[in-house]
Amino acid sequence: MDIALWIIAGMLAIAFGTGGASQILLTKERYRALASSQHWVDDFGAGHIKAIGTIKLVGVIGLILPPLVGIAPFLSPLAACGLMLVMAGAATTRFRRSEWALMAGDVAYLAAFAFIAWGRFALVPFAG
View 1 (cartoon, rainbow, N blue to C red):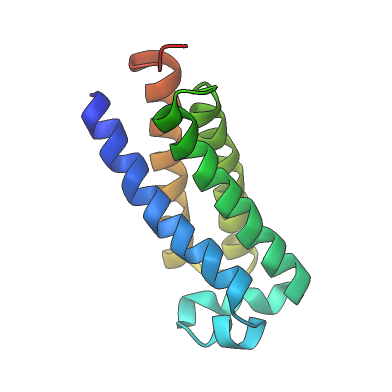
View 2 (cartoon, rainbow, N blue to C red):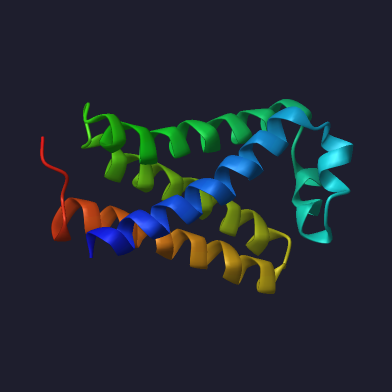
C-alpha cells in the first residue's frame, strides 16, 4: 500500500506542480488559451489565479518533501487535506459555471487526495 500511495502522490504532485507553475508563470490570457477547460479563469482576477497556483505548489511541496527528507512527515497528509479543499473550491466553481463533465474530474482529484490523506493518516502513516 505504501508504494501505491507514493505512486499516486507522485502523479498528483507532477500534475498539480505543472498546473500551479503554469498559473504563476503565464498571464491570465495565456493560461486561459491553454485549453477550453481553463475558461474558469474568467471568474477570477490575475492575482487570484497566481494565488491559487502558489497554493497548489505549496501543497505539492508539503505532499512530497517532508516524508522524503524525514522532517515533519505528518505534514504530508495535511497537505493532501489542503489540496482536497482546493479541489472542493474548483468543483464549486465548475458547479456555478454548469461545467458538469469538468466538475467530475475535479471530484476525482478530490477523491485521490482524500485517498492519500486517509492512507497516510490511517493505513500506512509515516513514522515520526
